[in-house]
Amino acid sequence: MPLSVFAVIQAKPGAEADLRNGLFNLVAKVREEDACLLYELYTSEEHPDHFIMHELWTDAAGLAAHNQMPHMKAFGELAKDWLAAPVELTTKDV
Image (cartoon, rainbow, N blue to C red; front, top):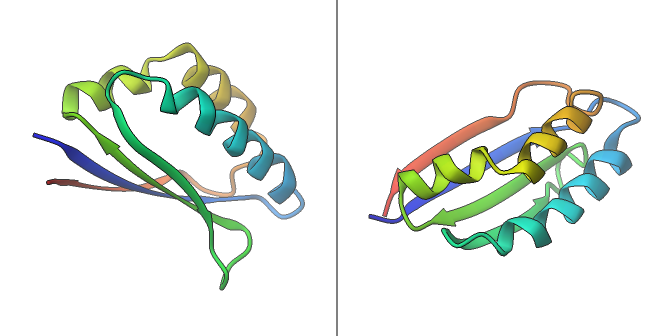
């Protein structure tokens, strides 16, 4: 069953551009994953330091595999310096 995910990502003050660039670079890599059906990045107009990732995965196993991808681990290491808070995830079977 497909799985929809919304991730809200908040940048530290002064790290907005680094986080935005890192996320944009990540999008192309993630879209190549077999289980990825949709991976779209948005910037909040009300809160320019907030980014929203809308994701759609073939299933929960596909999302789990995504989280173990080398590009996700590399991004996680870089993002430690850019994130103001843990990423907020909302998931829903569709």
